Amino acid sequence: MKISLSFVPDGNRRWAKENSTHTLAGHTAGAEKMKEIIQWLNEDYSEVDECVFWCLSRANLDREVEELKGLFFLLKHYLKKIKKELIKHEVAFLALGEIRLLPADIQKQIHDLEESTKQFINHRRLGF
Image (cartoon, rainbow, N blue to C red; front, side):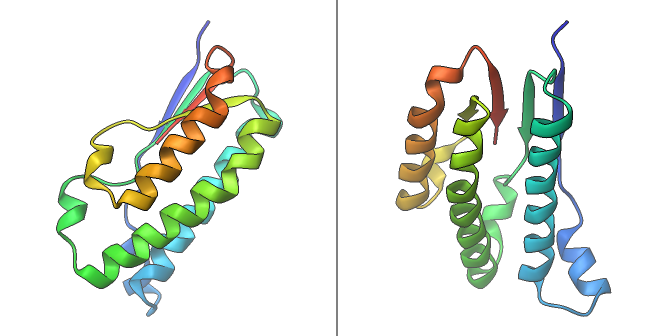
C-alpha cells in the first residue's frame, strides 16, 4: 500500500504576533518544524512513500518585500540543509507549482536538488 502525507503550514505570522516577535521568527519556527517532520519520517516512518510540504501560494508572493526576502532566505537555507539528508535517505525531491515565479537563484537551487536526487524517484519522494 502506498502512503502519502501532505503538510500545509499555516499560522506562522499569527504565532509570531501572539509571541510578540518578528514575522520571520514565525516563518523560521515553521521551517524548523518541517525539518523535524522530515527527520521523523526518515527515522521512524520509512514506509511513507511520498510527503508534500506546501511552501508558498501565489497570494504569498503579494506580501511586503521585506517579508518575501525573509521567506526566500529561509527557503534557500533549508533547501541547502536538506540536500545531504535526502541523499543519505535516498529520497527524491520534486518541486511542484510555478517555480518560475521564484527568484532565479532559488529556481537554480531547486533544479539542482531535483537533479541530485532524481535517481531515487522510485524510492521515496518529498515534494515542495
